[in-house]
Image 1 (tube, rainbow, N blue to C red):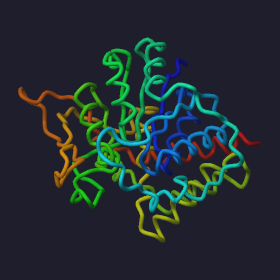
Image 2 (image 1 turned 135 degrees about the vertical axis):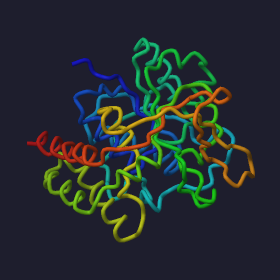
Image 3 (image 1 turned 180 degrees about the vertical axis):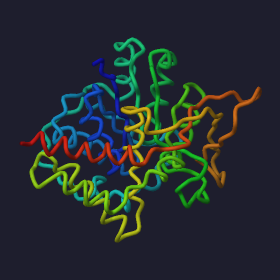
Length: 317
């Protein structure tokens, strides 16, 4: 089997952690690097979480630190209410001995893309600051990418400050998102698809049971426990595992249905809808620059999550 060489750019994040665990469990994926960025929690925590997750999951890949703040907009609000103060819910890391790569995220992204000769899949499930920085420094990066898939955007949002028109990842750094959409064809897994893939309480119960009680499946078990509790008891959207759906779409293209769209991003300071992805059908004036997720096979997705739990439970035996 020819594996898919992949870099995960992320802001861990409970759903980012699910995405990483899902990718690591897949025999189709060769995970080359994890490149944390600011987002769900500040960069100091996303960096620690990336190192801790890779260590707990036994991943032999590069961890290259990325941006600490958006390109232009101030970093004013995290999502710790959804992800917990640490960013990874109830998961507690042992002493972290993993060390970061000496190169910054954008250099690792570019060098791995060149090394892979146009076969690299870049999966970005946080704000797009690292990707935009890589494009600013290396404008030829798109020629070395097989696919750029992101979790972000949609025809509606989840940030109250935008009037519900902007999705969080895009809202955190709308300038980065605008620059990325202008330069690369993006496969966008946004809220239209992720909300249709919501995990039920019964699904979480099955995932927890499949993980068993051993240490091998501790990461997915704790993520599932926290997600169930925070969604059912605290009313957060942890039952929508946004980033894992984007990862699933790379592993199994049948999970998500895409259609071509034209997308730009509102990034003006003071705009009431700052961070909104403005979606339109392509025409002569606005050519398609995005493959947008418009449908999801929820049963197929939840089956992948459960297979992931089986994988870690069996690997520990």
